[in-house]
Amino acid sequence: MMLARFVVGIGTAAMTPVIMAYIVTNFPPNQVAKGFSLYMLISSASVIFGPTLGGLIISAYNWRAMLWVCVAICIGTLVACLLTAGKQDSPRRPLQNFDGIGAVLVLIFFSLMLCIPSFGQNFGWSSRAFLGVLTAAAISSLGLIAAERKAVQPILPGSFMKRSAFFLSVIALFLTQGLMQANMTNTIVFVNYTQPDNTTISGYAISVMYVGMSLGAVILGPLADRFEPKHVLTGSLILTGIGCSILFLFSEATSVLPLMASLGILGFGLGGNGTIFMKVALSGLPQQEAGAGTGTYGLFRDLAAPFGVAVFVPLFTNQITGLIAGGATGANAAVRSIHLLAIAELLCIAGGIAAVLFLPRIRSKGASK
Image 1 (cartoon, rainbow, N blue to C red):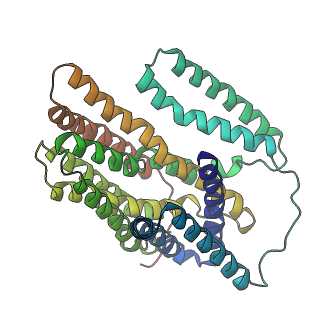
Image 2: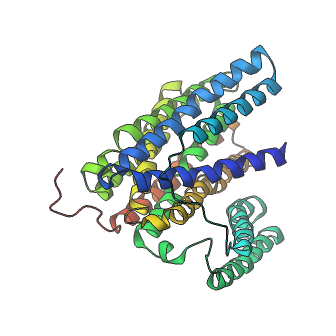
Image 3: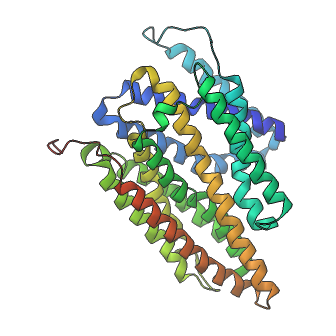
């Protein structure tokens, strides 16, 4: 099962930069954010309806039937791509000078990087496990740098990554976008501690979060085509902060409405962020570098969510465990921990806003709105 899931992850991750490269190269510059908004809308909507549809199929038949439905969808998508492939597509070129060593080191380094915050919080910052992962990550990073310098076609293009529009966007992504998955998981844990007999309310709240992401992508995303993207980003990050601030209102008897409000507003801001960060990070990318650039950005973007989970989920759950060990009830420990989590997340959002303020302008001052 794990091997199959790994293969599915590779295929899904491989499609993402191709889709983004099509948007960068085929959409007019003043409509790129609109293209990314459509992409984010479809992605978020599929997360809303996919699990529901899958649950109905599994209830009516079994889990194997759901897998065969996924196979049929993949085949149908492949046929549609083959039938709609245009004759003006870029000519195929043989795979030459592929950076195989760099690809392996990328897998090793980023896997270890995701383990660093989790191992530190779970095993201790002075434990052998944490120090071993930290040492291995440092060694693999040095090897990756050396390999990329020697590669004819490096898998991580240094010239693209040095652009301030890229690395500042990535910093802001890591500080903020990981909140989605982390808060979703922590909401489930919070409800399990405070209302163990009513766990369905967390499901409603999470569904609202994905609805908010869809709306944020559609409403906030296209604004980056009309106004300076960094200004729109600042506004969407403030919305993200409001969603996190509602965590301070959580109590042992929190109803579904505050949960939905927090995750819904958070999702709305994050949906807009994800769309606009794509436009900013990929702005001015030459067509011949679109594939490498979108692939590199997609790598860091997809790492932002698990990195946030690795930081915020252990922070929340370990705090609960420590408070319970100190004599607090499970519900009281969950409330105190969610309030501490809110403080940590607001600090990260403030850092994300600071990074956004240093982003270069995408629109000229005289551009019409």
